[in-house]
Structures are given as C-alpha cells and as structure tokens.
Image (cartoon, rainbow, N blue to C red):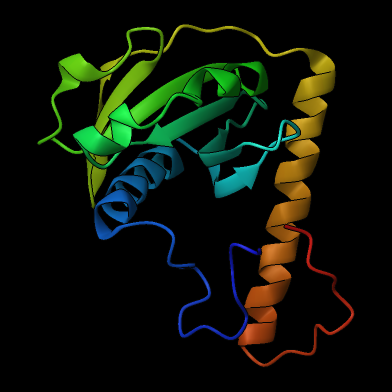
Length: 166
C-alpha cells in the first residue's frame, strides 16, 4: 500500500498515523530540516519493517526515529531493535506527556511538539555496514521519487508512466 495516495484530499496523509503521532513527526522533521537533513516518513526497509521516520544527513549518515505517541504505543512495540541494522543512530520520539523513563536506554530520546523537538538523550553511534547504507540510500531515493511523482499526479500532471514503488 503506497504511503501517498494520488486520489486523497491530502496526498501526504495516509490515515495510519494518529494526530498525536503526526504532531511528533512534524516536530522532529522540523528539527532535522533546520539541521540540513532530509527526512522521509514510513520507509520500508529491506527487512520488511517500516521505519516511522528516516533522516539522512548531508554526509549520508542515517538516523531512524521511532515515533511513540502514548504509553500503550510504546508498550506494544517489540520490533524497534530490528531498526538498528539499518541506521547509524536510533531514536525514539514522543510527546511531553509520555514518561521519558519508560523508553529503553539503548536508543536516543526526543520530545516533540508540532513546532520542534528537544533531544533528551543522544543516541549511541553504531555505523551501519556499507552495503546496508547503500540499500537504505537507494530505497530513500526511489521512494522519494515515487512519492513526488504521485504528488505531481495529484496536482494534475500526467504521471501515468510511473509505477507504484512503495
């Protein structure tokens, strides 16, 4: 299922994320944008897992941010360690009303609102293997291009020659 629908009222919202999760994502994306990083939400990795947010630094460093909008959301997640093989740094991001002490110390922690985010705990660096880095970069590029094509289609441009890449 594509993350962006060319027929929806807003092609950037697919309906899977709660309003609280979108608030966190927006704040985190703003911080990375201000740092000169590129971000992409809901990127499916080679493992089949879908990362909530992937950020690429100007140097090509990969950070994955796992968004947790509530205590229940955090407690129901046991897949977050799987992301470690696909990034140089791994963070959780949440809202201020979710207790910080509940988050695993093996990952960084950010607290966000719709306008920004603050890092409460830096993530340890664990450099991803070169082949995996290339795979994540290519997925990031291909999915970004596919989503841009669907946005163009939503705006009325003929993009019928694009296949769904997500």
